Length: 312
Image (cartoon, rainbow, N blue to C red; front, side, top):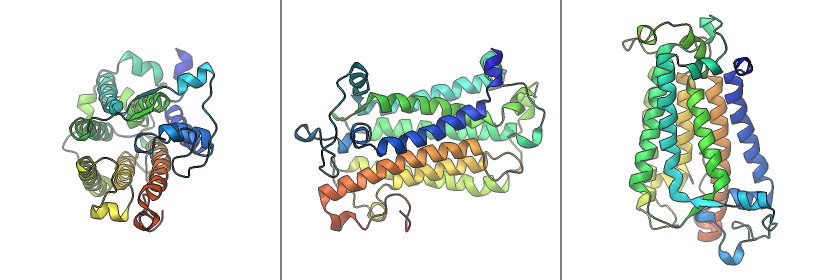
């Protein structure tokens, strides 16, 4: 147990996000892996072109026939996407109970507090950001259940498992930089003040969080209304290929700023999460644009930015 305490939970969560971003870039750099793990859903190669890149038509290496290759080549229904948000909520409430009770699992993985209040999140911040993450996961769960149409689309089981691991780590990242504050308080309820005056960062970025969530909801609602695999013509989609990905990044940027410990601009653990999210969504956005050009033509798709207006 002592070895767990010696492992800094902040370093572990940041390491996961940074490694995940690097792994995504590495996968994208290998045609065979890119075709296997990044091209699913609409971008899944047809039966006649299983060994070709669906965005370029160029051949890629055949699937690995080894046992490990077969395991990582397994697929699950794309409809399982809602599992992510169910799992996210389960993890959030699990850690919420651990935090409120200063439970044994929390005390096992968190090192002894340093009493350095200046370098930690406040209890009010932890509760607030935790609540926003619960709201985010609840909204996305509602969207996936309400908007997603039945289909035969699949995704690699490897991606599915990575997604579950991501939401587990994210549920820890939300409070990781406030673990000292949790363990140095005898009673969390006595330390929490719902009437505390919001910081300037919260007053600015909470409305941004709400607006980005609303726009993302509108994007998902619009996409769900389209006939499958047609080119979106909504005004926001005519300027940005994947505006729902842009909003996802803005949501997590807002959380990283609102969760910043006193004296810091951002919460670096949640900024590492933003790096993970941005890199992996950017890779998918790039593949989506290339697939769309191949399907709908360069003239209709090329003027659209992938995720960042006027930049990329």
